[in-house]
Amino acid sequence: MTEIGSGASLFVAGCVASCGVLLVVAGASKLYRAARQVPDASAVRRALGVTRRRWRPVQVAAGVLECVAGALVCAGVLPVLGGAVMAAAGAGFCVLLGYAKARRVPGGCGCIQWRTAPPAAETVSWREIARAALVAAAGAVGAVFLRGEAGAVDRPWFWAGIAAGGGVLMLLSMRTLPRTPVCRRPVWFPARATLRTLAGHGVFEAMAESAGPFGPVVRYRRSGCSEEFWFTPLPPGATGPGRAGDGGQRAVVFRTQYATRGGGLAVQASVRDAEAVADRPARSIGARDSMLAGHG
Image 1 (cartoon, one colour):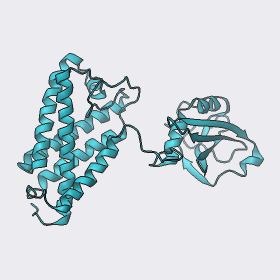
Image 2 (cartoon, rainbow, N blue to C red; image 1 turned 90 degrees about the vertical axis):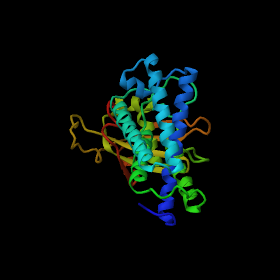
Image 3 (cartoon, one colour; image 1 turned 135 degrees about the horizontal axis):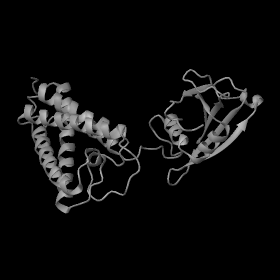
Image 4 (cartoon, one colour; image 1 turned 30 degrees about the horizontal axis):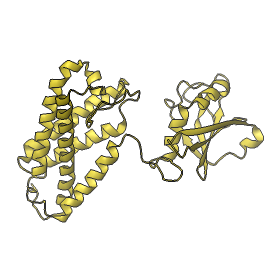
């Protein structure tokens, strides 16, 4: 058990409390949707195979449990009980969301939603799973280590922890990743994020059908807001896991740039001969086989 006064423990307590606030908001959202009979199209409900009519009592029970656990964590009373319930809720969501993602069930987690969401083709994101894991870890830490911070609401380190934890939770709760203001590139791992978007673009699919399959090594170069991805076509019959794709005589180059409005990816493709391949970029990115699956 820690005592009030330790800056580190107060900071961690603030982070745990921010997860408690998230739990209260998520629980209130479920109760609101159940009361207003808002249709639920979450991946969790679909993964469990529960009908919408039978899902409403589950929403109410989960919402009450989350509100109570979050309130206990935020207030600092009964920390073992509140932290244990929060840890169990976070771990349960990790399992359900991981199962939904593995089975490619359409829809989001439906944790914080106040109105009917439009039909979504995307599956559960890793950010939603990471958020659930963070809530589970915070609950475990609060139940085991933090039992003396009930009167810490007037301490600066406590509020610093709330601000830090809240900021991380906000980033994990965003439906779209933040982008740079000028080029509209993703802030986190921009080259890999653009490569994933490119792999699902129609121009890429058309070029992969005609010039592919491509090797797993992608050459990369950026000039201003434009990015170039150089793919080396594999020789015929080279489709095994140990295939070489970095010494070919041709290269398929995709020049990409995000549109100013809407954030869509504009793609131009060209095929370079052996002389142009000699001028390929030095930086390389390893493309996962799953990213290029079905293209070539």
